[in-house]
Amino acid sequence: MPKRSDVKEFIIAPDPGATRLTRQVSGFDQFGVKVDLSVVEERPLTIYLNRQEIVTAMTIGDYPEYLALGFLRNQRMLSDDDQILRVDYDEELETVVVRTAVETNFEDKLKKKTRTSGCAVGTVFGDMMEGLDSIQLPQTPVKTSWLYALAAKINTTPSLYLSAGAIHGTVLCHQDQPLVYMEDVGRHNAVDKIAGWMLSENVPAGDKILYTTGRLTSEMVIKTTMMGIPVLASRSGFTAWGVEIARQVGLTLIGRMRGQRFVCLSGEDRLIRDADPGAVSDEGRKSARKGGGDD
Image (tube, rainbow, N blue to C red; front, top):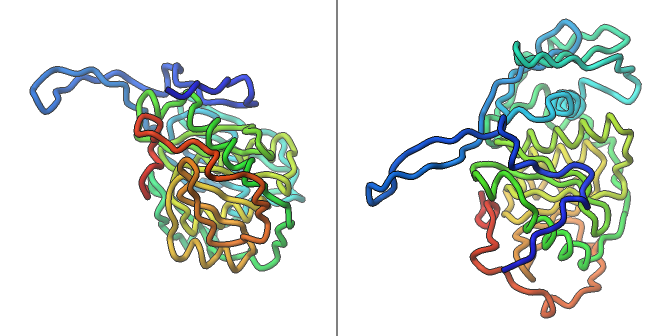
């Protein structure tokens, strides 16, 4: 049985014991035997930018301030020039208000809304491809030994998925070190939380890797690119549009990472193959996580 990773390695790690994130429910299995299960919560969170309501997201409820900041940043409603005065979260009203020094108005942008393939109904406002052409991702090298080490650490880290399931995880990494591990009912929420944390802590993106358990969709590729991260890896599979956009922007896109196996469909020139795949242990069924299929 694989040894569990030490969560002390992370700056932020999942907290599967947090009572507010799950609840106990009872039901019956296929034999009619009563079972008790821990299931993840799903709560609405309405995000405001100054006085304007932007969106209501369905989320597990942790790190609402990071989620709001990251969502607005990835929607290009917050720029590098914006001075953020404060972020106010009201747990009772289930709202987050991001306040900037200059008043904002995105009425026209909000009129054009795209429903994405993300779980918990992802939403992109305006032109999904807006701003991508101006982004130049750095040619940061990526060692395959880092990828194998990250997969081993992340897949053995205690998480809400292991305790409750029905959730996605995304991890910000530097070389072979996982830094921030966020989970949510929608993979896009988990990415936005990481983006919000990076914005709050002024963390550079050019030397980072983003690892996710979910599909490598167009939305995931666009968000990763907008964050300035040059590498996106996943246990799961690809969508055609996700691959097309990754090749267009020069993002390294790696999927189907399970044990010694992976497939790189974009940005292979960044890879340094310093690890022997034959020396990497293959995954057993017990170590498979939600991303084991193309979910």
